[in-house]
Amino acid sequence: MEWRGRRQSDNIEDRRGNPRSGGFGRGGGFNFPSGGGVRRAGGGLSIGTIIFLVVIYFIFKLMGVDLLQVLETGGISSGPGYEQSQSEGTRTPANDEMTAFMRTVLAETEDTWNGIFQAQGQNYEEPRLVLFSGQTQSGCGFASAATGPFYCPGDHKVYLDTDFFQELSDRFGASGDFAEAYVVAHEVGHHVQNLLGILPKFNEARRRMSEEQANEMSVRVELQADCFAGIWGKYTQQKGILEAGDLEEALNAAQQIGDDTMQKRSQGYVVPESFNHGTSQQRVRWFKRGFDSGQLSACDTFSGPV
Image (cartoon, helix red, strand yellow):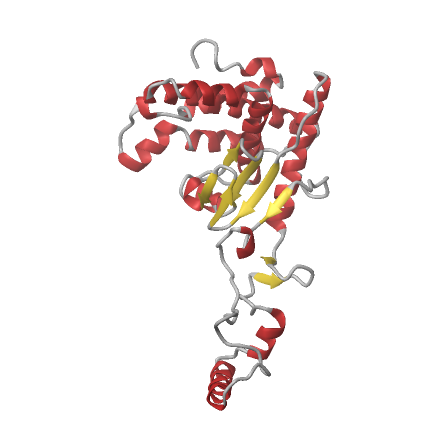
C-alpha cells in the first residue's frame, strides 16, 4: 500500500504511554508523594528527615537515577522505546511510523466518505481514532487490549490498541499494511452506520430480541461494516494506492477473523448460533462486494440471506 507522502488526518488521539489520559500502557513516571508525604525543603523538615533523604538520594544515584532530574522533569526516562515530550511532559512513542500510517489510513477513509456523503447532499462527520496501549476509558466504558478494536457510538470514536496488529499477524496469520488498514476501515464503517441511523435502530431493536436473534442481527451489522470497508478499498484502488497483493491481504484478514475460523482455532468446533460477526466466507464475500461495486446500495445486508 503506497501510503507514505499522502495527507494525514488530524483526528487522532494518541494515548499510548500517557497515564494521564486514561491509558496504562508501557512507560510510566516516578513522582514523590505530595500533601501528607515528603514536603519540599524549607518547609520545616527535621534533621532526621534530611539525613533520610540524603541517604535515599545516594541509593538512587548508585542505581543510575538522578532524583534531582526527576524532581525537575516530573519523571524519568522509560527506555529507548519512548521519549519525553518537551511541550506536554507526556510520553509518546519515539517511533512514529505507526502513528503516521494510522493518520494516513484515517485520512483516506475521510476522503472516501466525505465524497460519498457530499454526492448525496449530506455532510460527513469525521470520527476520531484513539490509539492506546494496554487499557483506556471510552464513551462506552472501560476498554482493554482484550476488547479488540471497536467503535463507540456514544463518543463517535474508534478505539485501537496497536498491539492488536501484532496479534493479527502472529496469532491469525493476517499480516500486511492493507490488512491493518482494513481493520480501521471496518470500524469506520460502523461510524458510517451510526450516521445513517442503522446502529441506533439496531441497538433499540436488540432490547426486544432473544440472544440468538440479537446475534443474527449483529452478524448483518458487522457484514455491512465489512462491505463499507470494501467500498473504501475500491476508492483507494482508484487512487492508485494499492500494490500487488494488497487486496489479498485484506481478504485473508477477513478470512482469518471469521467466527467459524476463530472458533475452530480456539475450541476445535463451531457454534453457529453464537456467531455475531459472520463466517469467514461471509466476511470475505461482503468485503469483496463493496470493493467490486463501490456503491452503498450493494451493502444491504438486512434484506434476504447473508
